[in-house]
Every structure is written in C-alpha cells, then in structure tokens.
Image: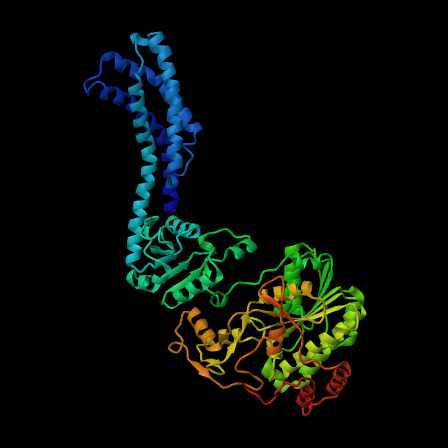
Length: 633
C-alpha cells in the first residue's frame, strides 16, 4: 500500500507540478540570459516589462510543445538521451515561434512601449539554460535514483549478494550486463568481464572492467571472488564453447551458458539474460554437430513415414526431425501407448495436424499387427528404431533379443518390401562391430539382413550405425543422474572404459539424412570424434550437480558386466579402409565386409527361430564369425 501511495504521489508530481516548474524554468532562463548579457547588472524597466509581457505567449507555446513532444508522459526512472533530445527539440521549436512573436509584437508594434526584441545571443543562452533546467531535472532524477539503487546494492552485497563474471564482451555480454544493471543487480553484480579479443582487454563495459582472455578465468575468479560465471559467447564454435565451459567448471563457481546461435534460431529465441541456462552434459561433450542437408532430406516431402519404436527417445526425435520436411503422414508404431500419445499431442499443437500423426499399438514380433499397419497406411519410408538395446538384460534374456531384434527387423523389412515402401532405414549400433554381447551380435545379423534384402526388390535398405546416445532410454546418463540425486555412490564398471557419444537430435538427424543418401545395402557411420571415458563422464555430471567427485560423491568401480566391452568400435578395420565419403563430411558409407551367402543366412535364421537359451550364443556365432561370447573387454 505504501509503495502504491508513493507511485500516486510521483504521478501527481509529474503531471501537475512538473509543468509549473517548466513554466518557471523557461521564463527564468530568458530573464537570466538578459541579465548575463547586461553585464550582470539590474535590468532596465523596459526589459522587465518585455519579460512580463512575453509570458502571455511564452507559457502556452512552451507547455504546448512540451506536451506535443511527450515530455509529461515519459517514465522518469528511464529518462535518458531520448528525453533530453525531446526536450531540446521542443525548446527549439517553441523558441523559434516566440522569436517570431517578439519581432511582431515588440520590434514591429512596440507593445508596451518596448522597441526591441531579444538578440540572438540572448536567445541562444536562454535556450541552453532551458535545456539545462528542464532536461536536467528529468535526467537528474534518473541519476539520483541510480545512486540510491547503488547504495541499496552495496547494503545487499554486504549481506552476501553474488559476484558475477561475464565471459564474452560481444552483443550477448552487453545485453546481459545491461539487464543486470536494469534489474538493480538483484541477479548478481558483474565484477569482471573476460574476452579473448586483445582490443577489448583493458576497456570497460557498462563500468565493468574487461581484464583478460578466457584462459585467465581461474585466476580472475580468485582475484575478484567470483560466485557465478555467465558464458555469453553464442557465436563461438562448439569446440571453443566446450573448452571455455570445461575451464569454468574447474572452478567452484556456478556456471551458466547462453544457447548457441543455432539453438536460438531453431527455438525462435532472442538474446537475453533469461536465455542463460545451466550447463548440460551435452555442452561438455559437444563437438561440431551434423547438419541436415535440406536437399538430401527433401525425399520426405509428401511421403507417408512409419517409425517403429516411435514412442522411444530416439523414435520420438525421429518423428520431430522428419516432420520438418513436410511428409504427408507419420505413423508411430510402438508397444507402449503413453509416450506415443504425449508425442502426438505435442506434434499436433506444433504443426496443426500437418503432417498428420497416427498411432498404432503393437509389436514388431507380431506379423499380424505389422500387416495391419502396412495395409492401412502403405508407408513409403520406414525408420526401424524398435529394438532391445540394454546389453546386460539381453545377456539374461538372449532368446528375446533374437526374437525382437532379428526377427522383428526381418518381419518389418519383409512387410515394407511387400507393400512397396521405397526406403527402409535400420538403426544399428557400434556394439555390432566385433560383438561380445547377444545384443551386439543380434544387431550385426540385422545389418546382414539389410544387405541381402536389397537384392530382393525395389526397396532401398540401409543401416545407420552410431554409438551411445546421451539421455536415451536405458543409457548410463539417467542412471548416473539418479545415483547423484541419491547422494551416491556413482557406479562405473571400469576406470578405463570408453564410449562414443552423440545427442538424441544428432542421432535422429543422421538417420533422416541416411534415408536420403541410401542407394541400397549401405551402412552409414558417423564420424563421432574421440571416445569419452565413462569415468570422466561421471565426474562431469557430479560437477554439474554442484558437488565434487570423489569428495562429495563417491565413484565406485564394479567391474565389467556380462557382454560389456572396455571400448567400442564404429567399424571393422576392413570397413574403415573401404569406407566412402558422402556429401556430408561427417557421414561415411561402408558395406558389410564379412558376408555370407543367402542360403547360409537363411539356414542360420532358421536355426535361430528354433534356438534356446542354451544354444542361442552358438547359433549367433555361426552367423557372426567374429562374435566372442566369452570376451569381456
């Protein structure tokens, strides 16, 4: 209530008392100008009489133009250069009109017996004084208010307000500094800026010193007692952003990061303090992302797309990526209705029903369910994401892995060929290379199936092989997150175990692009950079939670699990030698090198149809010669 009362008093002051002040200030400016040019002596009676008579038109003309130029409608707390410019323009126009009136009334008609008008020097000095008195009170109010804010901030800082480092003295950094100041530093006080540009170092930005390059972050954090680091370099390369983020994470500060320009563009975002977010694991593992080529992906235009496993983490992202290229319809085929239903609702809101999203519930092991879906929709493009992926669980249920991964794929591929689909893309895994697990061996068999299916019809069959997907269902990331949330320990199987990682959108983009590049029988492999140590991954996730690895959260080594390898490979040596580049320099094509003839494949598949838990590994090894069921690393 008290705040509202002060606001009302301020409004009355601005709307009533301010015009009165302006009237006094303007007329005082004319009198003071006349007095100054009279050598600061008492003004003659004729000059005083002229000054009084001039008020008849000076007051309404000046107030009229001050109103026309909105000088009584501006918010004082934001008064600045714009208001000063409006005051200068209003005073100039009003002064010009009054000068003309002086000539008519005094120099020509000798009103009140005065036979002169104000001289040019008098008018100029009066104009400057008007600008000083009338403009100064408006801008001075803002300066006074800012000083009071600074004093309030100093009191808050004494009580423990956080000190902020801004990384990047570009546009984003400028916006962040401006918003921190505009919000009375309630979100933190910017005490230092760092930037790699030597031309900017040593200067100041909104009063905050720019003290060095990004390599100085740890040193400057200690020097300025920084509590929070804001990384504001959206235009930097992914590699550079990752390097700076890792450097900032080595300190004990809270770290926030601005999204990349690509993220802003795709999300329709504008640069602001509110866009800064917590550092995510993807920021620490980021590298140059694979970008979709719209020409290659144009094959989806107007098509009917079927996504098996469409409600899963990768399947749902496939739906989102495919929808960008205007297919006619997308069918989500999945055993679990909840995720698929939520995805459909989201997509319908985003795209307004175009493309249409349809859901059909069923398993790829159910030939009747597959037949119904293909008969109803006649899909022309199939993305086959349905699979059992959890290595240790599939070691315990190997027959189920064979039935779902191998025969689910075979039945889906045969239905696609039978109903005239012209592209079929299988999602494979790096675990299919020199497999040591049932899951990996089963996916290797599906790659062989894709190769042999290509020769049987017009459908273009291809496989996409990639590593672990960050945050996908069953991946290590959700497990670590839960363990950290529970206070630890975080369990890592081996201190030297490594994996290749990619984001869910990147995996989906690779699959969509592979569909456009496929000619038939290929295996598409992504250049995923260097593998990441799982131990490093665990340590980074603990730091992201604001705690220290090995101190606040224990990391415990549990030993390799059944079927688990110490490191993964994206391709066999002979596949690497024979691989071919594509239009995208991050995607390569290879072909299965360890081929078997069709009769041998069919015989092996027939054995696997009748397999048991006791014989399944031997039956898999008969088809996949380099499958080593006993290997553990």
